[in-house]
Length: 349
Image (cartoon, rainbow, N blue to C red; front, side, top):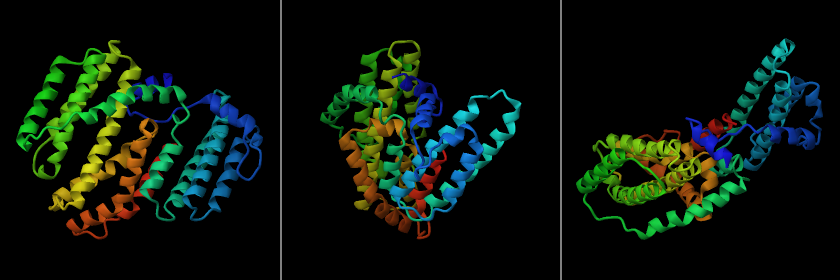
């Protein structure tokens, strides 16, 4: 579970871990996709990377499955190349070699941009890609910890949302967030109480989502972030553990993303989105899960949540078409978004 603490301490919540032992095992046991051993890297890392660049330049419009295989092989080659370079970082003679490998690395990333955008991609493929390349996928301790917490989140569904009016829920939501900021979070009971109450307020808030056009809710967003920071402060004070803070917050985020996404799709289907300003806001809200869910959050999704996400991913293109008509923009290139988001994700690997 050390990876959870490292993830928590990264201010960008990066989902990538540099695992030296993994790279070493690759050097010892893996071969390239064409069967060629990677031991050449030990003598000529730039030559190995140059050979791989030549190979990837010969590829054209790969299917999702083939693209995934190419990226996986690239990760193997890349880890091998840069592990060898790190073995003698103080040797001035290697400075040119490191520079050449860095340039080759940039060229390979450009080639993967080309391959990724060579044909239309889907939101389901984007999600599957993120899931496959999550460094947390095989972390059994993380999976067990998530399963221990999951019953708490499942219990939230039994708490009905209120039937408050828009103004009532906004007033109560703001008051709740202000009280949490004032009182802080000082232990496990405070943590679960906050998440449980916030969940009920958020679900009621979503019932009025289509009616918030022109309503300034920036303070709710800001105060929600301040409340989440209370979890981190509690972890720093050792009133809760880093594991609790990170797992509860990530699983809460997953739940909110799915709730918000479902509401957006339902509102579009039920023709509750009527103005260009609303359409623009709904497009942004629907894009957000695909852009922000990283490997850590993807790993923490339950099997049912993962199925829900795939079902909503299948509905997203039709929703975007409806919203584009409201924007009177049939050439918004929204159909290219899955590929562009996949390209961005590949550049983080």
